[in-house]
Length: 418
Image (cartoon, rainbow, N blue to C red):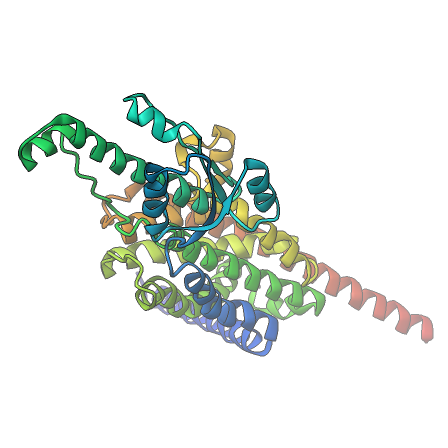
């Protein structure tokens, strides 16, 4: 390569770097000066996770209020009630004389469930016949249902064990163990040792917050720019097609710098503050977050063309938050999602970001274990980058045409005035 070509190449590189830094500076300045963008970029990611984590910090529900309808009034029924009430998960708040009375309490939302002990409960047991206890749960709240039902199952299992030992006529404790549990089963909770809802849902919510706040901030900034016709300022740096890359890279660099810090706060600090399970390795987290942030940024810049006014972004992005959480496969099994919706989910970076982060954070996976999610995020980054370039090129052409038409109209008015 000749010296002239080298100088020309260096000149173009310096010019491109200068233009990119110019766009980065203007976008950073616009971000700092826009209170709405600052709220979505800084305030919401800092405070929203704290609110969620604080709400779910107890992990499991305790002392769920339950009513007992005891028609047996025997020593065995009272024993069942005492053991049931001794559980930390439920609380026998009311003793009712009939199911109708207990049903009224459920209708008023005073209690979450009813335990019904029939009149022949102890009689059947003394006759060595099977007896039944009915448990009625409010299924509108799954955590309360779990506490009520599992506690009743555990207490009845314990009483069954005592009855078996009493009737077996064994002489040693070892014989009692074999009689009541011939096959020993040890339950070990993996990935979520506390069995809590916080460890289950918070990792996915944190990653979704990153995407949604990014989309809200970028959309709000684009709506402001369109309202103020600020895209005309980008025309000088888009003298040819390569200028589009400079614009996209300059704006995305601003967003990436801000969210590099925000992502560290969300993924590393917030789980530690509230004692949630965190098995992350920094190099695996870095390998996931770089393509995830880039995919979210370019996706947000691409759909920002749909935002004509600042208020539109709230209607568009906030509406998608809950469906995206379901489509990610965290709150609902991925295998149970219909194929059409699984295809729709592949369009959003949060789908692969949430799945990858949950496996890294809660399951101790490595970057090689989430190769599918990792590659999918890089594919989305590439596709959305070029799509963003096309969108911005179209917007700049429109802004240039609008400027030309405005100049022509002004010239026509001047000629008429002469």
